[in-house]
Length: 303
Length: 285
Image 1: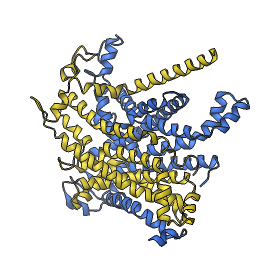
Image 2: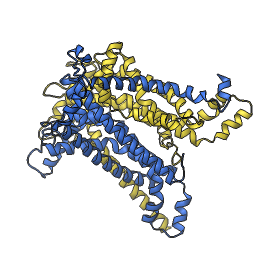
Image 3: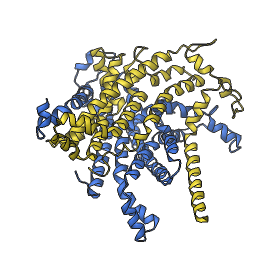
């Protein structure tokens, strides 16, 4: 062991070090994925185990292609991600820039900033179900006390308002992740180019646009990559707040998968859907990771 | 002098703005925490009671099974399961992730980028999508409703992220340090433990917090892989407060506080390391 570790170029060492990580991922993710790929070619139902060996080819996928509910949920999921990620990024950037300018008492603010990050997504779901509740929720109570409205607004019942409420909850939960990662970027930023730019007469906007932003971009893409690894956590929020309702108007891919797989016990069909949603997450992650590598290369720090 | 004063006033105004903004941001969470200490009757009151007339610990007494009327929810068992599962999986994920991150940071080998990207993309599989096949496989292996079953899954959830973060951190530590130690007679193993590991502590602490929070808060997988007090975790236990048409808000808010407090304490303890540990190697690829 010791000799392997001392010889620097030993090809075996990195393999040995990475073996536990690779083995874990193969056992917990790759193996189940192979299994679910198989079941997606069968009409497998939990209630009838023998259907696991009944191969029906691409029928599950063909049914998906012509399933309007699935495509609506798919489109809604993409829209949801596009809105949520952009709003989270902009808000996170604003908070990070603000906190970065504060010289005194910054530590306390940073701790408060991280508060929403500690909430479990399922808890965030219940929390906003509580707050947006049309009868006892703090929001309607406040609006009525201020006289802004005299009737209870059905935040979680009206389809559009429900979608808004879900996005609001998601943004609340995840903005601090962006803020903290961008703040880490601001802290790591070298001072010299900023000073030099000011000496050369750049105004605040120019400094931000041409020096800070390019430096921050890798951190923004790190945050985006991390978020796209985790976007499906929104399942917890939606499952609790609306359960995909009213009448499927807030159904996202993930709640649809849970409904088809667990409630209707149609595992084969659900696994076919799960593959599409996996592909979506993988594409998002891969896209942002490529952008991250490109942004780093732009900064002259190629691998 | 006046200029100094003006600058200080400006700094104070800035701090106040930021502080108010942060407080507004936290209001939804704080409202839940406040509600945990209010009786159900006050929470449901119409017209609403804004300032609590009385604060009480009854909700906590109820869910822990003390007092006159109890809610029969085994919170203590859930708490124990959550603690064991989150801590064990975090420690294992840190060990595996540190080894992997070190390999990425310090060695050149074939398919390095492919392996790295592969780890990340496997992590991107949505929990609910993964839960379908894992549920079936785990039930064949007898890992359903067992702490071990969840621990294994959470290790896998946390390894890629941990390896990535720690890889970035090791790359910021000059290689010459460990080389110098080896010239002085340390083995590479000793050089790692005496020189590089202590320097990487911030990164490892940050990775640990994120891993712990992920495991502590996870719901989609836990809700399918657990059944009883043998393995149910706190987030799954929250569901116990929902009946078909009603929700026990007071009890749920109390449970929410029980879930948040450990996360809060942990984050506060390592908060010094948290931001400096999150650079991911910064702009260096």
